[in-house]
Every structure is written in C-alpha cells, then in structure tokens.
Image (cartoon, rainbow, N blue to C red):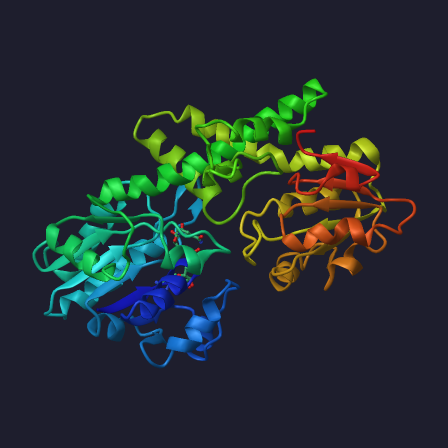
Length: 445
Ligand code: NAD
C-alpha cells in the first residue's frame, strides 16, 4: 500500500519505518525541515532502540521523507496523522490536528482518487468525527464516507520499546466512520498476524487509548498512595506490599517450574517518584477536562493526577531527613529521561526534582545514558552540570538521587564501595537493594 505519515515524532517515525519494514511504500512528512533532512540521511532524530538500522535499511527505497505534504498525499492512498496533541490551557490542544486536517482537505479537493485519512494521534473521544471530519469536508468540498474515508487508529507503543511494540503489537484497534475505511485499515495491517484486530467506530477507538493510559496511571498512583501511607505509618516496606499483591492469582500465574509468571501490569504497581512522559500526564488531564466539559466529574482520575504531582516532592523530603540543609551540598541526580530506553524528557519527574534541589541551593550534577544532549538544552538556564559518565557524576556527591530505572545504575553500589564517608542514597524508584548502601532512603519505605 502507498502510505503517507504526517508528523515524524516518536509515533510517526516509528510507524513509517515499521510499515516500510512490513512492505508498504511510505512517505514520511514533517513541517520540521531539519528532521526531514536527518531522516533523508538515515539519521534518526530520536533515540529509540533498533530504529536507526531499520531507517537506514529502507530510506531511499520503500521509505522517503519530505516536507511537501501535497505531493505525499497525491502519491499515496492513505494518510496517517501523527502530530502532537499537547495539553494546554486546561484542555487538549488540537491545533496541530486541525491544521493538518485543513491542509489535507485542501489537497483532497484536487485529488480525484479515493483517499483515507486516519488519525493516529491520541485525541479525546469525538475528535475524529466531530472535529477532523467536518474540517476535511469543508476544506475539500467533498463528503466523508463517499469521496474519502476517515478513520482512527490509536497507537499503543511505549517509548524505549517502540520498534518491538510496533512490530509485535498486543492489539490493533481500527476505528472508522464507514466500512470502506475499515477495509483500508485492514489492508494496512494485513502483515500483522496473530494479533486481535478490534474493529469499532472512531469514538470508541479514541476512548480505548485513553482508558488504557488512564488505567496504567491509576495503577502507579495507587501504588504511590499505598507507599506514602506505609511510610507515614512506619515499619512497612511498599516493595514487599506490592510483591504481596503481584503474587495474587489475579496478577500472576503459577508455572510448571514452580515460579510465577507476572502479568505486565505489575510493573505499573510499583511506588516511585511519579509517572511522566509525553502521554500519561497529558492524556489523563485531557480526559478529566473532557469529562468535565461533558458534565461528568472525573473524581478518580483527578485524584490520580494529584497523587502524581506530589510524588517528586517526596524525594526531596527523604533527602532532607538526612541532610536538613542542602545549601552548597553536592547532589547527583541519576536519570533524566521519563523512563529507561529513551531520551524523551517530556514531563519527566527529573525536572521538578532538579528544580526543587536547585531552589534548596544544592550544587547539582546529573547523568542520563541517553538524554544528556536534551538535558543540556532544557537546563541551559539552571546551574546543573550534565556529566558524561556515571562515575564522574557521583564522584564527589554527598547525596545521590535516583530518578530513572536505567540498568546502568545497578553499578552504583560498586562505584561507591571505597567511598568514605558514604553519600546519602535516595532511591526514587526503589530499584536498588537497600542493604547495599550505608545511608539509604527510598520511596514508600
Ligand atoms: P512528537 O511531538 O514527537 O511529534 C510530532 C511531530 O509532528 C513533530 O515532528 C512535528 O514537527 C510534526 N508536526 C506538527 N505539525 C505538523 C504539520 N502541520 N505538518 C507536518 N508535521 C507536523 O509527538 P509524538 O510523541 O510522536 O506523539 C504524536 C501523537 O501520538 C500524540 O497525540 C501522542 O499523544 C500520541 N502517542 C504518543 C506516544 C509516545 O510514546 N510518544 C505513544 C502513543 C501515542
């Protein structure tokens, strides 16, 4: 199939490259000319395991990149819209989606062949039918479901695992306003075997994405609330509490060798310094705001956000238990990306943690295996030294704060073995064994 993907961020670029790998002819489009130039040279603008080799394999052959949206739409049968949908001014900002819809409509006006427009961005329920479709009809002068198709195909990939998730998805949701659109989407995903393809209307497809993210966020805030209560009561360790939950037959299954196979959801039932990233915080907030607009108060999800917003502060109070004044104290922050495996720092808990430490007067060094360049840009105005190695970051620290679960941080106890006196170690993810540290503090302990 000939496919254009509009927006070459995490979702668009991964989708474009992976659809090329599945045998489609793909044109990636972005308004950002710098990104397009990089993609044309086989350089991935984002850090994502396995992405660049696939990009290099297909670019110039089944895959191309351009800023010329018109040419891309005229030369393809289906366009996936994968532009950003940030949360701003208390609701989802559909500005990029609206802009693209208008541009697509104008191009469809001059295209005689049937074309399908599919929203892949995460948009609040009703957006595809009530916002995108009318703009397309108005700008094209044509009718949806007759002259062109409109669909919604949410994306469930996780940054850091994006290529694997895309190539081997757990589910594929195909939403469309008519059966011809659904048929086109089925053709697009024909190469994905052994996975359930759920066909539904576009509003339901949109809601499935929000419900999925809201569930994960709820699990995290639930674990954090239990952990915070345990810490307040004393003598309770949230790691053991969560392990006790994970061992329930609802969440794990006995295997023939006597061990238990954990369900994937258990990784979200873990206390820490909060969830971040470009999706969970903004999507839960957008759903709450959308519910409120519809006259439906979202009490549970409101609380999920509130719990999350207070979690980074917990790290600071743990540190201050050991070091009441942080003024002039060298503090190392480990992990800047919102999760391991990515350089994405959007809404990362590392940002409020570093800013709060800065306000306390700490002398800051920070390290991340992947996000150093982005961090230098982000903290340009703040006095945070972004180091090149883990060893350098912690070399003179009186306190270390772990924010992201990067595997490399398993090496911290060894690096500190000869140090005297031992620094305070605050484990914002409960990642490392507390017995490896002389002065350990952890969330929910
Ligand atoms: P992103 O910000 O990384 O990328 C968006 C891209 O769209 C940018 O490169 C931008 O230049 C481009 N763009 C904006 N307006 C354009 C226009 N008019 N024409 C062409 N290009 C344009 O965003 P992302 O993280 O890939 O997310 C995209 C959507 O997918 C969002 O709705 C997000 O919620 C959703 N989503 C993201 C993830 C994730 O893990 N990042 C996962 C699932 C769903």
